[in-house]
Image 1 (cartoon, helix red, strand yellow):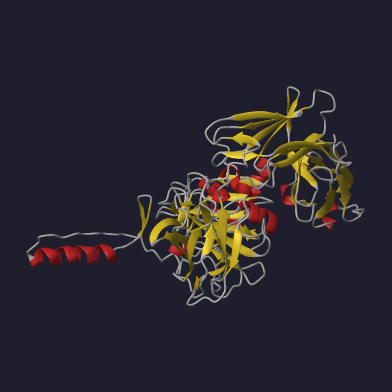
Image 2 (tube, one colour; image 1 turned 90 degrees about the vertical axis):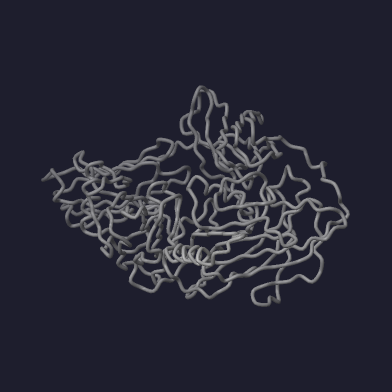
Length: 585
């Protein structure tokens, strides 16, 4: 948006004033979407990717567990198979086939400087499907991620790219759609380019007040919640004075809903005013994928991980790299003076301009100084590296691994879990400590007993789950993006590979596909390969069903007669299982 501010003093010639006024009007009329110096004309002229009414299951920037949602999710009436269309002229610049993430996805680069992404497809169109299949056979891999040069696969606005689906990391049929800046790969809010119908205000269910007097353990603070009722025009007012500590932060549990859907979505803007001065402002117009990690400080990680309660905070433990955040107070934390009252107002809005808010008076309680009695534990600084040991495990926090300076608990204890390689469990803080960068753990294991050894982390339900690990010079090392309780397990048992049918017929073409169930309770499947007399067979791993699906295309096979069909599967520890059978082809 173009903003122009003029302060005209001492201009006596009315013609000059009128001329300047005309220029302002022309600038406003010529308004376009401006992103990092790139002007995108025709703001609302992007074609919708589906021919059904635009109803959304998720919107841009909403809080996910580890990232901001980078696009919008179009609902597809609970089923697959709707045609997906290109939003503008351009060319296919990237193709993705994966068992996770976006699944089957098409990336289209447009001449106007934008790039659009269409994810979780069930099928590609014929031209793209042939290109993908040729590449899979060339690389002998079902999974692909390839960048295409301009001109190989051209598309026009409204061309069919494929069919909507449920591939990849998808919880149900829908179309994931993104708009990016083609130059920087930053994601841009698609609602900037589509007119949407939305008359529903965001719903604020609770006000959260954080006692930050024990700031070195800010991650562990559980907020005091005020449930909100009795709103007037979307705004709540707390009649009683809210008693706060001398160092306090605020937050909101808020969900947004769009017309035609009861899926909980995120908000577009969050603002905090203290004594009518705007001190905190988040706008979800765009962000880079690198900055998406800032979700670790913009939401309450502990509430999300332990209670599935997504709280938008209006305070920060340190500076934030997220471009959409403006914080006039520095960190959004109120240092309150004893006896003084503060008028606090928190406001949220969706992209359509529907607003909700809460206002109250805050007054500090009797505690006038920061509590320093809670400063035990290992001190980790944002500005320097921290290296320390817990029994037989070494922990390496590199520089800028954490947000702000924190103290974390460490411990070594014994577990009675019979599946562990050794009973010792090492605690490094907790899983809800936000990390900027991964932390390296090194377990001293020597040379003997290394095969099949890997690191596990204890989950909330008490189970130990696979994390990874590589052996180097007497140590098993792993880099983790979440802290917690860690131990070692060993897996020397091969995966169980079971055909779902007998496959006892002689002719292979009597089976359209061959399916195999894979069970590996100890670790995870890392690789698989199906062959006919040593030639690669098109196959993929269905992670949801723990199945390998194989399809033999006679037109691409160079073997005939009596052939050996072999399928091999390995887990991450190198244990292998093999199934073989002879067929006529």
